Image 1 (cartoon, one colour):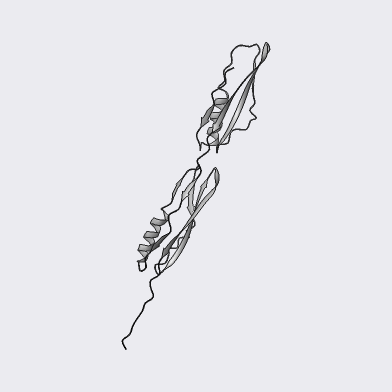
Image 2 (cartoon, helix red, strand yellow):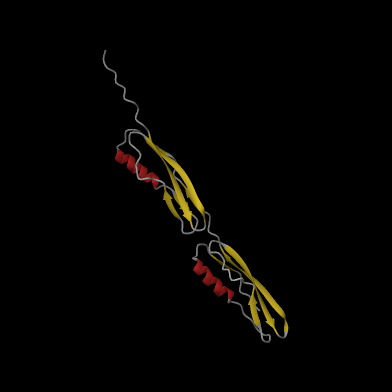
Length: 173
């Protein structure tokens, strides 16, 4: 009895792809000799989880003419790297910018996050579509990264428009 070699598949495969790879691996043993041999495995019918898992299988060959022969091997699904979400730094723009300039600065800042890791990761944010007011305002945004294989990851940052200094008028005496 020769078991298949240990096998490792990468992260983020679809569960159907993991199942197919596991089935092919499970049937990749070879047997020679014996009389009226029967092969059984320790597999309980539960496939390894596509988000990361390892299953060790024992193959047992029973022969009418000798003691049982066994071998074992492990099938591993590599876990996805953890989600890493980095928000932009808090940003402050000066007073008296035109609203279009505030909007452009805000848009650039809003898209300045980075994301890696996870499986099928998507990022959303809490912006309600209302730009910070050019006369002075602050908006705090929360970004949420959703991965199929872990809890949501969030971070927040604030975009501030400095209020203009108050108008001072000195009249002649």
